[in-house]
Length: 398
Image 1 (cartoon, rainbow, N blue to C red):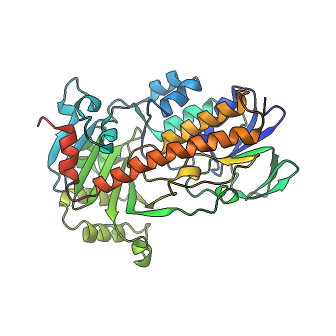
Image 2 (image 1 turned 90 degrees about the vertical axis):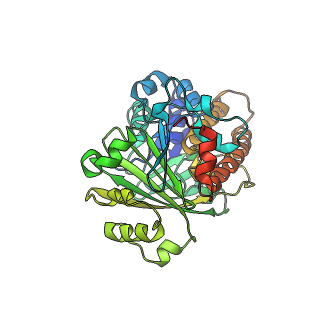
Image 3 (image 1 turned 120 degrees about the horizontal axis):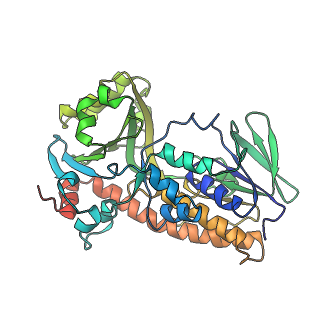
């Protein structure tokens, strides 16, 4: 086996890195995951995830974790209600009995139909917990923020902010869209998509945003209008997460010195940029238990490539960062973890470099196609006729 008597270091404890660690441990590989978080509870988790049958679900099945996954899914979380900017209901999946999105979507439409397919949905925190608990004790090395690494023997010496160093024969960067490992592989920079999103989280949403909380019915709400979007949904912990998407210049927000810890300033921004939207949406901004994150949407080039190394690779957002408009980021990362584990352990390749090269070519080809779908969806969702186009796919019966 290629990894016999070798030490594997995975930098980053997201979904892709954890899937990879789980699958390697099932093959008795010596693997550690170096995660910057202080512990498993510290990270603010993002929106719920819907796992796809051709990627995320396959990864969970191969990891022997599918039963645990289905115990934690939220059946209503994937159901959607679509409204216009005036908060007028235009499509309600709850009104459709015995019919899923996949059955009512029109196969003649292009990539927007992908967001209409029913997929089991789970809170990110729950999925991460399942993966963490599947690993052997002390697999995760917490409080390990990667700083740098240098070549040593046939592997790498890694340096962390906490002052510790470790040696690994093989390093895999699973450290997200702003990966520090990536710079050791590629100098290609991300491209701004033209769309910026502001993420807001309201804790104890049933009390702090009661109307919006009740309207969601535990599922998702998607609003389109004026080339802008508002998407929101609730999570199992009682919080509500929303995303405001707009076409604005790349540096507009930073040039205007928006302080994302100043909720009143963000509300003033919303009133300016979303001035044609109903005041119903203002409930998002009335809670003191409200936190914002600035998320300009970038992607790596579709035709990106790099020279394969024999002891280093990357996966997930570190390799193929893209906007969330097709819901494929985490699913692709999990599939990356699945395939990399397979190619490193199935005895089909003569050496590590050949196995990694085969993995990278497949990964980048797959990511390029997904990026094309994602950019197409993003453009359509923020187009002048976005609502009409989406409704024509669903053909709502109300």
